[in-house]
Image (cartoon, rainbow, N blue to C red; front, side):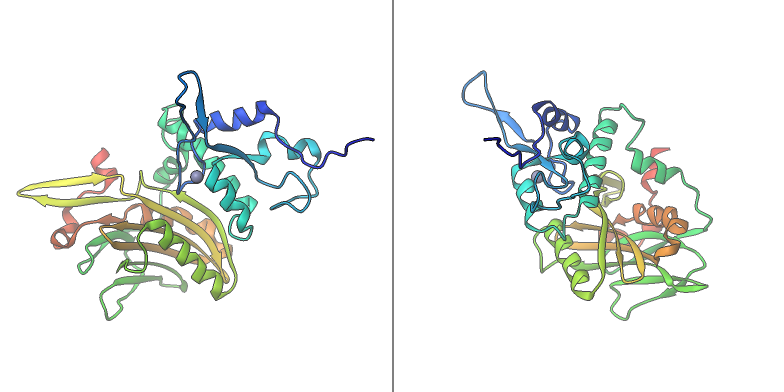
Length: 311
Ligand SMILES: [Zn+2]
């Protein structure tokens, strides 16, 4: 009796390639756990990672795509390296982890590793953003209450909420194009990750929501600047997340970070059909976010940006 093949599993060679292409790190940008470690036997190791299927290996499985051939289904392009726990999590909620998101994770994990190893000039994603010119004159908006600042176009209309949590800037010709930045006490959540999850859940409940990408922008976004006598202390590499999503008829590029229990957001919005036009401005604005601490906020305008410091 012939045994029918029901699962299109990855061959060992493909699994190995997927693992090594990300240096055995989990590809989820919010996880990045190493997935191999020493075994008690000196000539063995423990592997806690998996070559997960972007679209399922068999009908009825998560994100199954019937249009793929058997060869395509077990090819490297349908796989992503994840730690065991992330591999389980993505299968519990297909709406939250669609194939497009998993492909973004994979792409970013591979690209950022190449940049770390200096095999590409810089993180390709970040570098292309920095070199883009924006046709706007920018000025630095400083929030005294929470101690943060970010760049916004000079001639956009400014709106200030009564409570001093932040400010909103709208394009003079179209109020639906805006950049807003705000701070808040992150009392509902203990971590940046849970706060991001919660925020996206709220948007989903609000109606149409599609996550385009979720990436770790720790390297490019945030500094803490503290005053130590007459010396300024710049601390880089504060964990930050960039979400790109569509909600309703608008698209958003949104950076969120958290420092000592306070959360900071810069969120840019534009009608989806005009996203490409404003993307470089939005990247520039969100990457200019600096956390200053309330003591530094008063003279924040004199503190150079990371780009200026790098020159
Ligand atoms: Zn993981």
